[in-house]
Length: 445
Image (tube, rainbow, N blue to C red; front, side, top):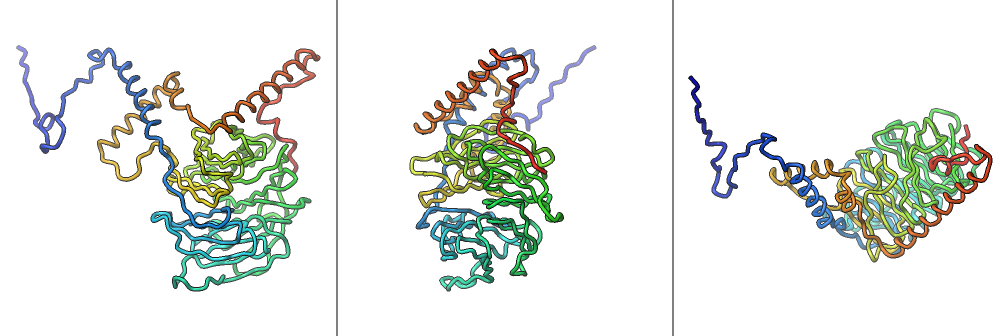
């Protein structure tokens, strides 16, 4: 004898409050849902369309500089504190949460070439065209008092770049030579040379803290080790690199911003060819900075646009621009992975969302679940032509659009010329050269 028992649990169909939604029972048997894939595809299409509808990345700007912004620096411990240096020698301390300038003082005669916080965040260093290295307090005790540096070092050489060690009271400067300094001494601890007349950027590795890399004027990128007496290796490119940023999650990986409109990601263990070539800019790339996750980085170019790249991909996932924004001078990614900061020629610092359509603020549980479901659907149907087209489509200014078409024509012409030469030459006389190898001249040890 077969007995069927009905069991009803009130928790499954009763609302907790009058404002709550009615709970609808659902049977998850796949045989009862023959059109599930079609329904999910429609939802994925709607989700990716809504993502573009809500893509409003610009948050606000910080006004106050009287000249172009030359450099930015983030506090290692406080998310709301930002430093900015300008071409007129002025340094400003900003409170990002309130978007106000807390301090402003004239630090150098000429351009502020670099700013860097100390490892504990209690002080910061600045260098300028007046060949001085100045140490300042991170927080001023009395508002409106005359700002005086804690320490001033007059350098014998021109200074163009500055980077602070992540843990120790040690910093590096570059100019005519690369020098390692201690905060307690007024003379460099070590001077590193490799037959180069000038260096314009230097960066300490945040993980393998004894490593640092520098960009030189002879189109080379030089790798140093503070434990060694001299430089380790260098790679020479066809055009010079402007800035460098280390990956904060992978100790041996760094990315260079180059004059040839590209960015190159290198592995220090194999410098003969880059790991990846990132193309999309139509002007010289001026600055680059990694996200704290190490999966993405942001770059600013001479083409008046900001681009966000995935480390493993050759093309940008997003491009930010405004009508008023001019040529970029510096970019940065906030340490909470939420915001992007940029300084440009027209004296403004702009704040952007790192993900254009992301909602800022507290999310309710149902809202969070809906967003996670939409993200899963977009991943599932990412390779579908319609979904991919909507997700990739970006409107860019006219000058970028025309320049992209021109560059495309140039690349097609080079490929066509190579294929013609190969067709009319002996087999093997015109070898195939990959995009990753064609930009590197040589590697020296």
